[in-house]
Length: 289
Ligand SMILES: NC(=O)c1ccc[n+]([C@@H]2O[C@H](COP(=O)([O-])OP(=O)(O)OC[C@H]3O[C@@H](n4cnc5c(N)ncnc54)[C@H](OP(=O)(O)O)[C@@H]3O)[C@@H](O)[C@H]2O)c1
Image (cartoon, rainbow, N blue to C red; front, side, top):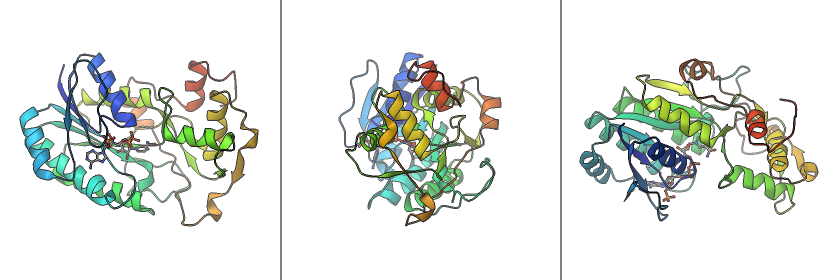
């Protein structure tokens, strides 16, 4: 078992990584920023701002983790670049300095979504949004500071306890609390948070380095995803309206389907598509997919 550090331990993915990690016997330290940390037996919590390189160096220098899983980020706002890009570079540099294995979380929105086949690990970033730009810069900084790092590109992360923000939005749209169209021409490969965390922990114990796509096996449109989520929560999806990403400004990456062949060959953890997850959890009856 290893000494593990999870940045963004209060985040949606981070919490599950921390919980699973402690459950399999790792010694877990985790960071929080604006939220109070949850009470998880045996987990050491430390406040950390990834914009501050000195604080990161000191924290990682003292903890001397063998594995760092970096999930902390900001999706927008003035702290986007300092946190999401520069902060990732600082974490990578500090992890490299103590010889820790690093798993850095990246995103499918580093792509413009215009490719007509699924994106592979060797496809170069081509971001079209500020968030995509920050995540692409983070990848470059991480690779430079820690050449042995694993850069995991993933897709929409969903779960049930608690509900994630994408599912919450879909339920709000289905119930008419929010007025929005869900796109029929924007494709992603949503991954169940428990599967993603398990895959990351399996990867932590391996020697693989470089980029790896880890996403769910099903490619679905935002509209299809919204309908599925509504059904999974027992909400009638009939009122979800369909729209087109192609006619929306600013432009959004439309087809960010990730090719997960490599991860499927490498990992024992099943990267289930959303249909399989919802069936396995008994949230939908037999459906196509
Ligand atoms: N969610 C998705 O659908 C999705 C899709 C693709 C890729 N990803 C990637 O997966 C990772 C995790 O995403 P998530 O949705 O689980 O994140 P999240 O729930 O938004 O959590 C973000 C975490 O970052 C921490 N944080 C924010 N600013 C910080 C700062 N300046 N210093 C230190 N920590 C800071 C937050 O701490 P506090 O809460 O304590 O403030 C929180 O723990 C991210 O790298 C993201 O890019 C996510």
